[in-house]
Image 1 (cartoon, rainbow, N blue to C red):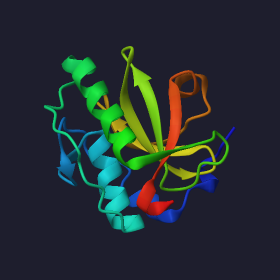
Image 2: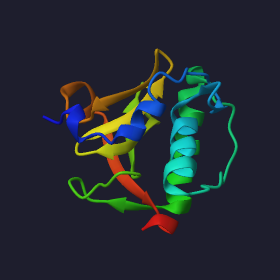
Image 3: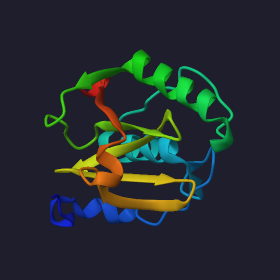
Image 4: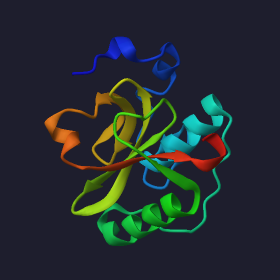
Length: 142
């Protein structure tokens, strides 16, 4: 089981940022917005958005299509166990691939969702591991 000891100090700057559907800055972020912020601020990646979507959890199918399109457009699949800080973990919620987190350390991710502000969690726990669809690395970062 992963521990928070494997998480870099800079991650604390993001923990507790508030969840906001469609949010893209520190005043409020959804899971993809949090990843965009971390990639830009910590990894120097300006990840473009290839499609548009109204980010509403109630429209899980549309959000899932958007996320799958983003992943296909700019991301390389990474074998489980080879993920590194900055990689994205794609997860299924409500039956759709609608949740992402950014890998921040060995087995740990930074993420937020509609019922929780930004937090660090172990993606190897039963709660998350059964939802993982894969790990991906942005091609410009590969």
